[in-house]
Image (cartoon, rainbow, N blue to C red; front, side):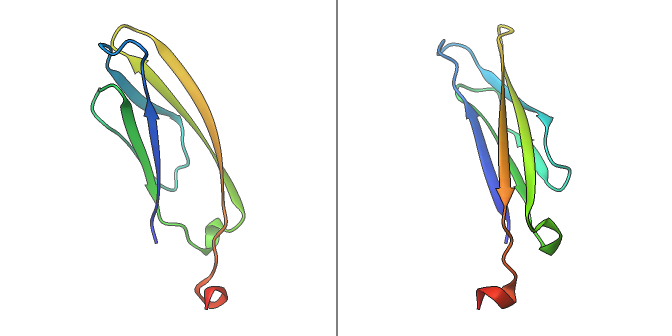
Length: 88
């Protein structure tokens, strides 16, 4: 089953558009940035498997507005994968 993590960033100046970009994301999935908007949005999608059991992943996402303002946030995600046999 796929896992999707959503990111958003709001600029206090409502006229500014924000673009999110991946500074550091795990290589096991796909980071997709939305179009420049306020709020700016992005998502990260991957399908966990047994190789991801007890793994922790760090995401660093940057928001940049169309006037050059920049903000960077870190997010740490721990994933617990339950095997099909254990779930039944």
